[in-house]
Image (cartoon, rainbow, N blue to C red; front, side, top):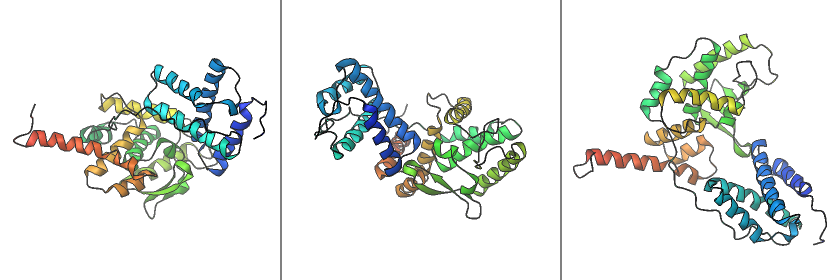
Length: 308
């Protein structure tokens, strides 16, 4: 390999980001996350070791960064994601002969904490969707529709934001969403949810005619396309009214959907398809909640169970 004095990481990072975008077909959010992780590593190397070209980086440099992240009390899941970004980056460089040795080989992240997914119980969901009073008009209809869509379909926040009118098949009662890796999947919806969508569309088209060229289903109060923080604040506002648990993000409703489907007897492969998981291992994550629930039922009902 011809060694160069070019210490400008931007050249190689730009090539990598284009590879992610055009060959791997990663979403803009995923690509940005890779970019952020790699720049953070670069800043650390610059600060601690000075200007080191790629071909001189060794495993000890990366290990010291991982130690620094752990000392900063970053979550194991966060560290694992950052290391995964670097592994992908250096594999890319190695395949293109820009580095002779991949310094991430043999590096492993700390074991993630085994936390159960946070979800709402049925009483909380009943309060949220059946008992709460939403404001009259388009904003109240939209807020309830956002909650219903997240809970009834298990879609991700980004999938909700990018849902368009043309992706709603009213005849077949399903939605087509664009998930991770730009993979599309179909999600069935109920007659009741379809009616809510149509009610909102009528109000939206009257309130915001020709506001956006692409007919995104859901809009902000000003008729603009939704954005991540808007959805997060909306969901947190309503979950605060029915739950005291710490986590109140849109992903809690996705967890609630999956947990309830499992409790009602849906098989893992069906849940996997609806959620858009690439591996059944991700879906099996939700079986832990059901096991814990079974333990609670046993302890309360069985003669030898431990009652409070």
